[in-house]
Image (cartoon, rainbow, N blue to C red):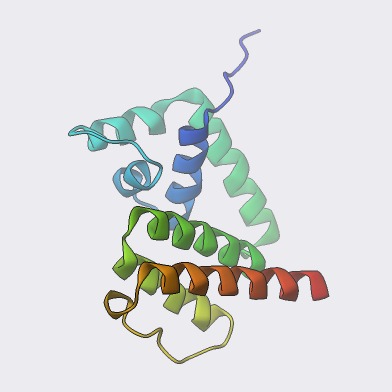
Length: 139
């Protein structure tokens, strides 16, 4: 009986990002793959048996719950925020912060990310993460 190889960290990140954005090429880039051939990598990853199996398993779990929970959405968004912050992509990080705020019921837009410093961005992400964790633990 053939066993399906385990996923490496980049493959796991690819799956998370693919489920979040629905675009394999974008998911490859967000997962940390580099080079000229990201579209090729995306195609290859989507055709790997272990990736297909994990995507199918995760989709079934999502469908079984019929809706992604707010907590799971926030967790995915926070992972993206932290990744963009560490890469210095503050405009993308700001957009994720705005989505996160809307999910949490905060309508006011985040102030322009380009006008605030890296330390303020890190502080903002840290505050958001702490708020999320406190709210999750309170339930």
